[in-house]
Amino acid sequence: MKNSPRSLYAKEDVIRQMHIQGLVSQDTYDYVKYMTSASTVYLPALLSAGIFSGLVAVAVNLQLIYGVLRRRRGHMLPWIVIVFLCLVLKAVALFAYAVVNMVYVDAKFGLLVFAAFIPATALGAYCWLCVVAHYEDLEVVRAFRGDMRRLGEEESEVRKSSDLMK
Image 1 (cartoon, rainbow, N blue to C red):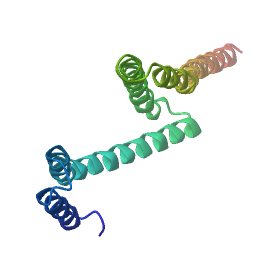
Image 2: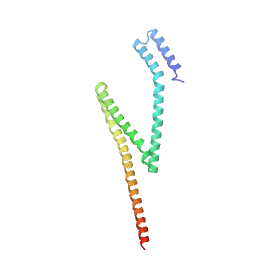
Image 3: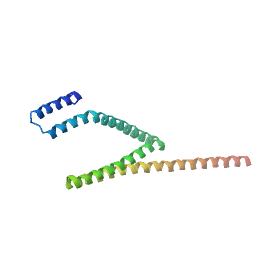
Image 4: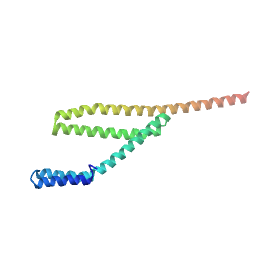
């Protein structure tokens, strides 16, 4: 229970005592108070959001695997949509993060983030394109099967009519 609210408040009390003794500045004490309150308010919400998004990711990926194995296009569509949205959001966020770092923090670090972002996003986009291509191929296969089925039905009708003629 190291990070429980009690221990956070206990640590804040220690910093408060150090502030009273003059060992810690007012800015440091205010920062510790802010971080303590933020940790107790925002961390549970972030943890819950992380768990929820992880469960959604697992469900969507399992649905993609099922759709690929069973050749069912409908099970692949949620993965295609969600991963596309994630790729767009990731690209915008990492680009903005890199630019902010280049302008306000350190140009070299910003370029490093940008250089690392390009291959990672390209790999994700390639995987997305592979799944989309398979999704489209399944439509072609389904249409081909339908044509073959109709061709078989037409041949059987021709045989029946030729049998009736005899």
